[in-house]
Image (cartoon, rainbow, N blue to C red; front, top):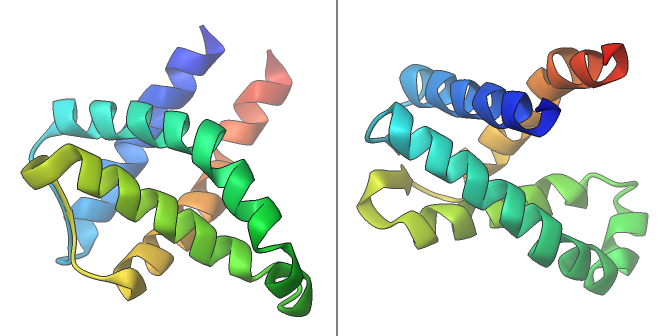
Length: 115
């Protein structure tokens, strides 16, 4: 049940980012839920591989390269969704991944601790 709540909250976060920024577009809330589901799958499968492969540059940048990896997984999700989810470039993807990380820190993580 907590996973489903986190999925819906992530969909709301994606819709909020799409509402605020022009280079980040979602076709609707259904697309946001599907994007959130795909993003969680990509984060579970692809992200650990990317983290291991880029460990030296992540150490050199003191962990900041993890935002680039998150942006790449976000762009991969957008590519999988086609025209329902559009990100204009890597800069927009990095900004969105930073915002997602910040919002999840203050919204999703406290909900997980409570349950």
